[in-house]
Amino acid sequence: MLKAFLRFITENQLFTPTDRLLLTVSGGIDSVVLTQLCHEAGFSFGIAHCNFQLRGEDSEGDQLFVRQLAQKYGIDCHVQRFETKAFAKKRGISTQMAARELRYSWFEEIRQQFHYDYILTAHHQDDLLETVLLNLVRGTGLAGLHGILPKKDRLVRPLLFAPRNDIQAFLTQNHLPWREDSSNASVDYTRNRLRHHVVPILKELNPNVAASVATLAERVKAAENLLEASRKSIEAEIIRTEGSTTTINIAPLEQQVAPVELLAQWLTGFGFTYQQSKLIWLNRKGQTGKRYFSPTHTLIMNRGKWLLAPTQIPNSAFYELHETSGEINYSGGHLAWTMGKITVAENKNEVAYMDADALTFPLKLRLWEPGDWFCPLGMKGKRKKISDFLVDAKVPRNRKDQVYVLESGGAIAWLVGFRLDERFKISETTVRILKFSKCTSH
Image (tube, rainbow, N blue to C red; front, side, top):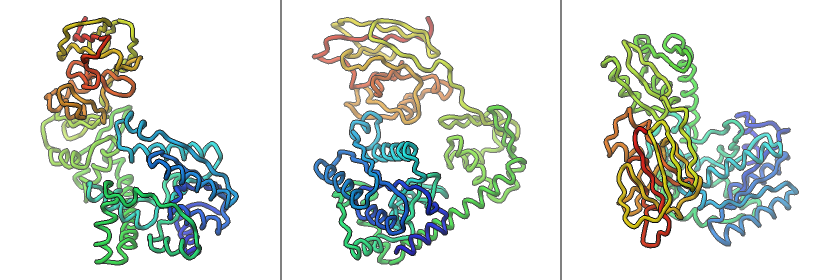
């Protein structure tokens, strides 16, 4: 396996024998095998371990195991403990997404601080297969079909040549100790459901399905590179950029073999989806002034051309509100707030009464952003994306980019002028009430 490992590194130009490597080690089979292979190859490396504190004593056992592994090889060991659930709650994301965000950010910090050249993860062929299947289920473009890349910037996956069975065989032959992650057996996670229920069926149909998908991923990446080269070769004829505005000429684009795919390649970088790109193309002979929106940009039809420009956002889009009473003028209107004891309080669109002791000061008044969510009053604590709320409220497109939120400790307490968040409403135990009043002018 060592020969195949070294050959894969050389063929894909992943790194050189003189580079310093940071191995991400959980203590599981894959990362233990990666550590042993790097040791046998004589590479210079250290290891990094994340304790997400999600599995109680098992998490502590994993941390101890990795430290002992580092001592065995006589290498540096970097360990970090994360308050993963608290971070996920604050960001309004899943625990899995929180763990991913935390670990990759920390790995890069360690790489820079201790002067490692590359970060190595132990992803293998079966991981690639599962990733491609997940992308297919969720809907994907070319990038989703090539799945995990062997190398992306400073992140390297030198085990992508090996299926899970080969890795387990190497572990057994070398009598390597390892730690089992009990969450791998759970079918609560989509990836694990694919791993335990879907992949075995595919392997019955084709025992080498992981290798087949790895070959597919390699060819898709090559096709993607060809498309990118073609796009760049004709870009000067079709696209012109002046300042912050990009002009896309429709007539020369119509002469291309795959105009929709080319258009999607350009527009994806500005936040538009493939389906939007397809709709834009089908309506290319539509009325001048027709507009399409991404989270960051606006595309306007203008006499045989599309004009693409950033959506205008007011300069003063961020304000801090302190616990004392006050008032401010901002681009969305005028906002006043007062502290006191109020016996009767009825929330309305322009007026919100909040439990002051549930708030974390200073509060932040800002424009809403894609991905923002809150728990609208009256929905019994159920979460709702602000984008969906505004659609349901039939807010015109030209008004959506002027909608503000009031944020408390990372949570949205009020969609200003629309609805209070359930978590900050007054109750029978409320002692202090903060009243907010909004008007469009002052």
